[in-house]
Length: 324
Length: 73
Image (cartoon, rainbow over all chains, first blue to last red; front, side, top):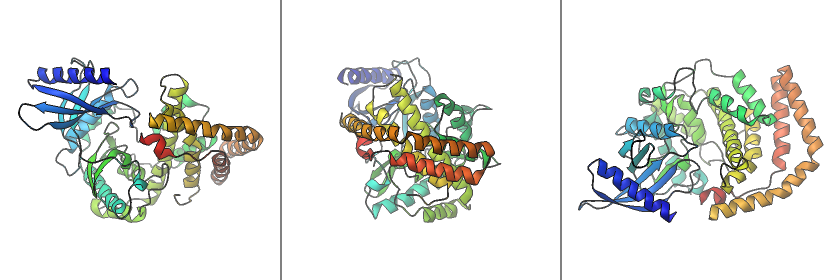
């Protein structure tokens, strides 16, 4: 990593110099948890001011430039609107810069990122869950129009069924349970496609920074798009490795009070089923990248082993069983 | 490195489970055929019931993995 880190620091210094900002850049680490995008932790020494802790994000071949663009637009849209997202410091949507690709630099949110809801003990977990729902309510009140150009007419967003129907074709023949899930989703698809809200697209504990009993940051906005707010609400507490261990019906009711809506239980269930289809897609695409030699990350190979667990939960949700 | 090692352990642990999966081949094929028939007929109750049986059987063949360790590094 050392050589790449040195290169990244030099590139960022050069990038800032081109913007009339003299800074010494110190790379303090690189995020290893994320499976897409390059995420570097940097310390910026600007003039005589105290150092600024920041995050540099670059696209990877897998994520594509649009991931950076979506984050940039979303971070600007939510700034000052009651959503604790990191402040955007610098960005470039183009490639005419020392990195040769789009990038953004944002403040580093204080705190740590818990792996999942269960990794936080009570009573803090429940307090954080209430805050998460309050953040979603604030987020969903923001005009999604700035993100609309990212989804051209006839295309779908990564929180929508059509997106998965299209991209899952790469992995045919699909497992039977997954085919059943797609069949059911199509059969019960809500008639009125909802793109009324700015949805985060991957709003879950693994994308929140926490300090003490406060959510201090919402990260990873690359899937942000206009969409159905219930997609975020269903995804927020969906059991991945284990159940969230929170009072989800009470949280949904709280969200309804804050937004002045009554979340439709059937629509929420539909989004939960879609959530398991999404998880299955991620497992298939991750292990596909490993199988094809596109990545040597063993985590991707291990993810494939989770597929039957997600499909079991998908079938249980279809059967109307409670989350477990 | 820690996450990579945990991932390798998870993969190796599941090799035994995969051997079981070969033994369960006939059972799984029968359940898949039931689901395919229900889908072909558009019989929703039968689709949901057969998907549930198939998923339960496939899940039973997977070894438990500490996913927090695999992903948390």
